Length: 513
Image (cartoon, rainbow, N blue to C red; front, top):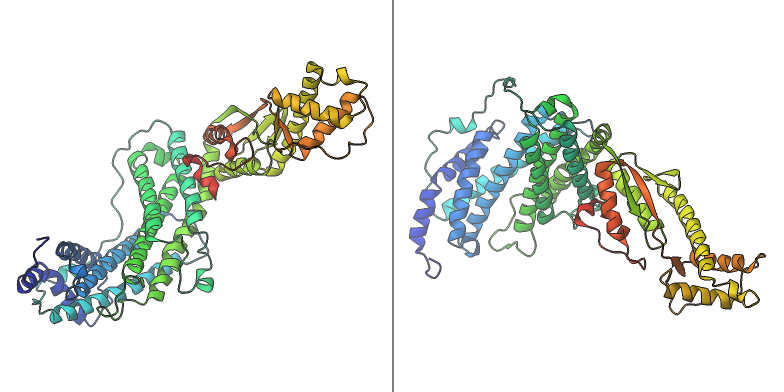
């Protein structure tokens, strides 16, 4: 089949036979005067199944690259996509009462109704064109004899009683920590993906940010799906779920974001695959089923926007859950090797702590600092530098580097010799090559050791040298947060020994934003 050209009449009969049910439904729907009752799950489910099977058959025969059949295949794909999209939207609409979503400033119910209306019109347009193209291809279309069932979606009110015996879990703390932490990390990734999406309709009309692609949305959607599966496997119908009322709320936000990202992925796929200037062929498809700007409007202002809203508003919920179930611990880590807690290490530590929303303290020399505040870490850095200077003075005395030159009036010469000697003994790090001293010494009274120490302190403050010490400090707080702090410290706080930025571990990707 890969090398021979199929006979046109044989292929036409094959498609007419395999597609008879889909074409019959399409004909019935396109002729239906009242459309208000048609967008129901039985109809969408049938359209999705039938179009999926027919699309696979068409692809097996390379219909996408055949001038006679490519438009028919494209319309089948449109029916499949908008049926799938409609099914997702109906799922969201029917599930809203059970999601326990936190309040936001926007009317999500109304926005979902508008998205359904757009999807309905797109689907009906695709079905109408499919019928027209089927007639052009001389495909026989039989009457749909039993159409009543696919339009019926009369549902009784209420839900089944939750009377199944609950199962036990190891600990409430472990489950809550696992879910809340995973959601916070995904929320950080979502912020990166949707950073340029706010105010889209005013600033980016007719275009989408580079991050909003089918590839990126599908990846993010997959991870939220995994999080939903994690909840359903380890939390749903457990005693834990009954203990913490916030867990069902979190589950609702995980689910609604997952389904919204599913709709976003479908819309991005259709835009890239069927509306892209590189792919769209006006000679075989003179007009798309929907206008590109209308599709982008739904993608950006419904799917992406509400994914972002509900991800953001659930972050505080997760942080509060982590606070309640925090298991306090302590870790000892090394001080950043390059100039201590200057801007980058201090910012990364504070961002890490703020990400989890837990209180973490840094203890050093009997004093406590708020690890979530960069200014507090900068203040601690002054104490670190003072400790380095004291240690350096002790080293100078221990090696007798100044005493033997007590009568030497060349202060800067002594400073140079001391610095180079300590560097050779791996006590100092030189950041300037070739190493140069200031033209004039500090006007400081005191003994020679004090003058030399003051000059070296000036070199340290200006970033020309630093003390290679083994100073350590302690972080106190939630063990989950401490685990990430330890990983950050082991990774050099995002820097090498010369202050150059280095890649963070995959577990800390949320710090990149």
